[in-house]
Image (cartoon, rainbow, N blue to C red):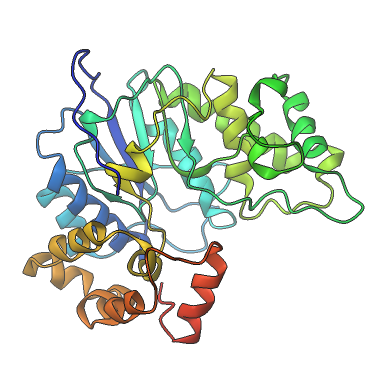
Length: 339
């Protein structure tokens, strides 16, 4: 895990942090996130929000956090504010849309950073040199979209059709360090974190672009699946539209020294630095936290029953497989793919 020194000089603007949680796995991931966040951000000046979808027509059951002890941990111990929001466009059919719709409930005109719940905070976020006028998102990403068909449009035609749809500068989004028709040549993010100076503006445009892509996609997307990729297809377009890009944050801060998007616990044990695993086991030791987390079977087995250590022993962190799928397959073969 790359280390950074705290920045000096210009004072960081206060900002808010948001995750989204609901009943089930995300409740317990939110507890892990909150415990790590407060471990390093005890004097955080902004607000820490846990956005929570509310019951409605787009859910077949109540999506709210049902574990009262977990809810108490989040609010009383970790100082989170539960932020209710309504699903007008997505919901159960596309839960990744929660991160889009929740933005409308954040305080407008206040800078924000969104994180997926399956993230650990590993440093003081006030150290991170955010430029909230230039948004960006996670570059810890594989080339998951588009998936090209033999006689279908290539990367250039597919992405350009989207930039043209929204009147954006496609050429400005390209990375000349990589050749055309290689996925890294195109602006593509993981939506595990993103930020901007105004959640209302960002959320409105994110919603607009995502709905337009879903409901009236360009012809070049005829071969492409948008589930679960819709948020990651729309996100680079939104970031480009606000003047952001891949170079808006110096590398090594988020998804580096100050956060770890582990995604699922078996992957955390398999591939992350020892400092991340040590943090995970430190923050889950207190009895009050342990009592809550043991209600979630994968966490109970990975952390408290030693399955994580078994998963870790399968891999050499200095020589990991280049493709994540290889790691996943190994864990599945050993019955350690728990989530």
